[in-house]
Image 1 (cartoon, rainbow, N blue to C red):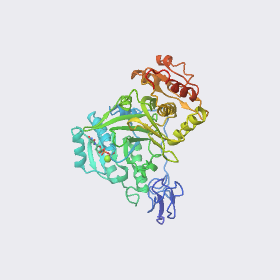
Image 2 (tube, protein in one colour):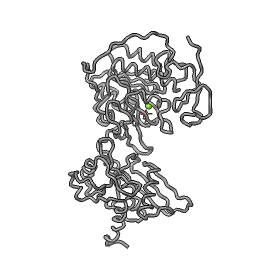
Image 3 (spheres, rainbow, N blue to C red):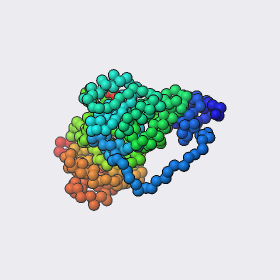
Image 4 (tube, helix red, strand yellow):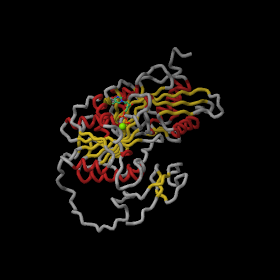
Length: 467
Ligand code: TYD
Ligand code: MG
């Protein structure tokens, strides 16, 4: 046996070094390097790490076309969850569900477990955080207590795997959470990178070898990283993030990685007394309370994966008492806002230099699409001029640095969704004539951002009640 060696591992990115330092060279984080004992489940290694002297044994090779025993997917029947997983949990795969503490990960998975167990699947729920009584209490609250879910409160990976090996192979195993698991293969404390990685490796190997689907729950730190489990992301087959803003009841399950389906999908839920409720039409949620006559609001016709989502963007432009005006943004990208402001100043003659700018995406939703540029620009100009935008109009389109409005994908679906929700007109990029929606005829297609600014400013003349 080789002499055990002490290593120092960054708890943020998993970088290994042989001396302690205040700052991690790899990721630049401070105070994240922790001394850990000899790492059993070392990088890329099985039990025994990289220095295994065991002679390899040949494994049977198989062909691509062969029998697949069961249906490859386990469908939970919770539509929004199945959408995010790409059509259900995949047998023999490992899925990581990350999110802030208290966001509802355990609730969601308990509901999924109960639904699957009621459909005759064998589901094992292992809680490392809560006692059996606490999990039961939650199940009662969710109306899931009668479902035949098998429950354990355990944290040792070897004990868990031994338990699972008894009886019929489970269809789904939920491990809540990865930070509480520990394996005999590594000496470090639970929650450290070494433990998390070694435990995940054992569990993933179990999933691949038996064909059970395994779901790992992982907590996210304040910085938005899955503490420790970030190093697990590349090992698992899928990563879902469960997110939501404080003060809002809805939750979004976002697909970040999926080896068996599309990413960028979202599932939308609402947290209620009786657990999570599916929201099958998220647009209605994010449009919420709208005031037709208020300046500074524009409705963005966005896409999340394959699904169109309409969401209101609110801007407030106010004279600033500060030398450096404030730019405050909720739900969008800071550099992107700076870019839109710069284009408005440089190409459209609109000045924001002495104004504070506040931008908010309604409902606490987060937009990552560049297609929101046009809606943001419209909201900003509307707030600055005090001219309300038409209440039945949606906006989408990307703005380039030259001030040109560029086409974006899925115009047809965006327009269809807008039409369904009672919108009558659209402002969108030119060159999308092939889209057949009736709204195209009533749409305005500016080729540059300046055209849109001129149109908004021109609406002043058309209003009889204007002062
Ligand atoms: P939980 O699933 O324990 O979060 P996580 O596992 O991500 O840490 O969710 C806890 C929160 O959800 C808690 O603040 C209470 C709330 N909640 C409800 O509002 N309704 C419910 O029916 C349940 C079970 C929880
Ligand atoms: Mg939990």
